[in-house]
Amino acid sequence: MDKKILGVDWGTSNRRAYLVDQHGACLAEHEDGLGMLAVGGRERFSGALAGLLETMNVGREVPVIMSGMVGSASGWQEVPYLDSSVPLTELPAHLAPVADADWAGRCHIVPGYCHRDGGGVDVMRGEETQLLGAVALGHRDGWLVLPGTHSKWVLLRDGLIQSMSTYMTGELFAMLSAGGTLSSMMGGDASDVEGYAIGLAQARRNEPLSNTLFRVRAGVVSRSAPAAQAPAVVSGLLIGAEFAAAARALEASGGTANITVIGSPALAVRYAVAADHFGLRCDVLDPHRVYCTAISQFFPQA
Image 1 (cartoon, helix red, strand yellow):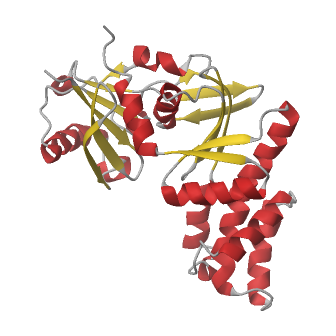
Image 2 (cartoon, one colour; image 1 turned 180 degrees about the vertical axis):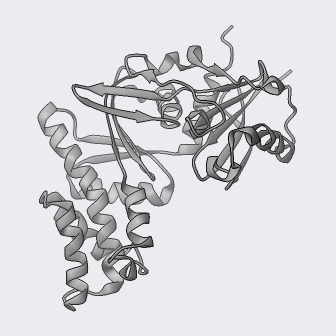
């Protein structure tokens, strides 16, 4: 009988589920907007998971591995962070069983990671599972970048987290688009090539972000720059700020000028363009393949 696991990447806004075999092959998948916020409370997660199994025609005997915000204080059940001294390959040994009696023994949550560096602290929930998949695919060393609402830059050494930095890139872009003095200018095309390059160039000069963001507005109201270009410039400034910080870290560490991006095609293209602008080589991993590979690592070892 073929063994299967249902992996659920349960984020703040979205939920993605993959039925995976022990070789990491995806047998079925489903994506919807029933993220943590939409579920509407801890007591409703059990029903939300039952509905997902029904939608995907997956029997309740199939083990479920969940990652992401489902394990946060606002999720189904808070799972303490692992210290970053724990290797990624040991994640399967640290799964937290869901306490709900209806799911006892069949449903587990992957813990996130907490990284402490001097007086600084950074955390992740969900990205650790993708990192496990990347490690299983042979990416045990170097910088891995996971762009999104909160973009993660993680330095691995033999599958162990050495450094971790989070940037609120996607969240800031959404906030600037939704309200404030820039919002009326953010209705254009964020993929405008020229505007994106302008933002990246300003970021590369390490100009203060709060100042360069205001200058986007100044350029439009003074009619020195087209309003339609503003979203792309802002995108370049925000993503460029990540790369400017990473470039300084690479220079300080004497590390290789290479990054591996785990992201959707649209985001991966934007990060690849930024990498080229900053003189970095960029490889791209498909996030679906990475996640399915990660879930396959949770099968009991013979």
